[in-house]
Image (cartoon, rainbow, N blue to C red; front, top):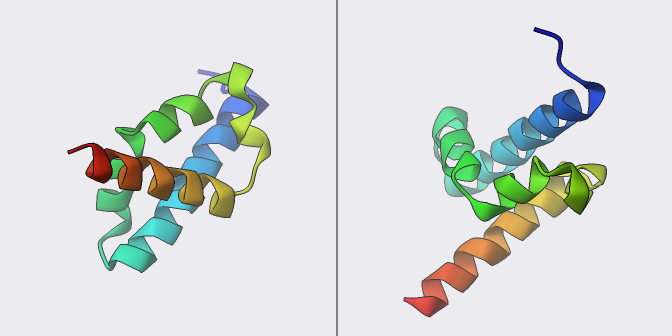
Length: 75
């Protein structure tokens, strides 16, 4: 299966953002990756129309943090 350069970039950014989150939360990279992939931020990252893939992993991790903070305040 051939992966487009956009999809490769999105996957790489998801992995890099997850590594950032794993270090911060002191959890495994795998666990952080699966938590990230269940998020709306990940959905936006993998949606070419949002152009989120044009941002760096730190921005994406920050967007995930904002999403999680907003979810906590709604509960």
